[in-house]
Length: 264
Image (tube, rainbow, N blue to C red; front, side, top):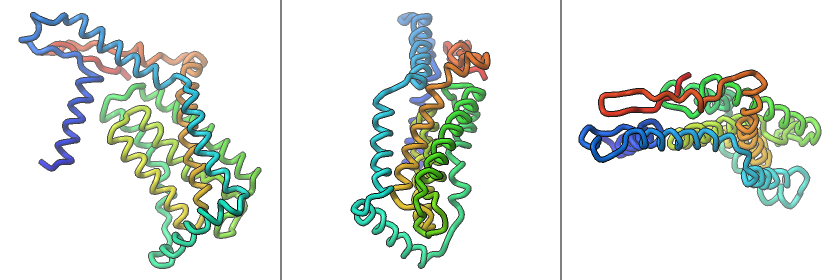
């Protein structure tokens, strides 16, 4: 077994123990209270679900600071000379050597697809219906924000093709999905999703379609949009009469004790 496989297996075991199971071995039944164990595990699971939907000021501030770092490149000669132009020159040299690619047009959607689909392979915090609602809300917020700025600011693309460079929509889409995966699943899933999102941002610069400042701002918009989708979920549940996932946690008896499962 490789190191990666061993670590992955260990993380899977820990994830199952902490989030899904309140199981007791037969020899421990005499010394531990089964009902208390179930209640503690249930409370932890419920707390995790609620935590994803709580508005956090620090998240908004952090995202705002990252966006500001990118927005400084809208009309700042010093910023462009110190960051945007050197990065663009480096990327252009790579493109001249390796050629163009359109893979970013497809990979931008991979993190969001993973967010929706991973729930069938592992235990998510929310039901598929809730995840769909979160993804849709986040997508609408992200698209509206990106396009409003694109056609208001009208920043010229590095290849001088159009004036809708700021911020990067592809990057925003990718980082929105990556942040959704991080919030819902975390762990190696989030690492993979963020690796894909970062690749999209780099490819947009490589293809000479965006400045680095566009990519930084796009990443911030995407990540913040993901949180907005979760923050609005409680209100959307009430509006559309959706069942709360925290009320769909089921206690399933097993040979060695009990387990918690999310019914969806």
